[in-house]
Image (cartoon, rainbow, N blue to C red):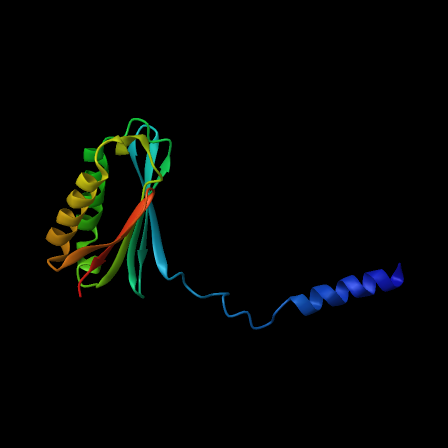
Length: 141
């Protein structure tokens, strides 16, 4: 029993790092959340640096969400944070996880998002990647 306690204490001491580099380091993103319908929220991760600018994701069942509400919230977010976003170049991820509101043509949603992003960033915007649950757009060259 005595040796077991000593081994456990030794293990705990060795596993604790005195110079953990993550402690006290500020996050490299800012996370916000906005309810956009009765059963749906939008989560936005605005990255401070790096090749990614923004991650715009949905959470909830989103059964009552309309495409117009989704694009309106995306546009509102870009307008609200225009000063810190418009100077950036990189990627924007949009995740929706096959929600019911996407019964409409996904190409129409992507075109709307690309148009909104071009207007906000006043730069070249291209569809970089797409699958059934998300797509990534590239801002700038």
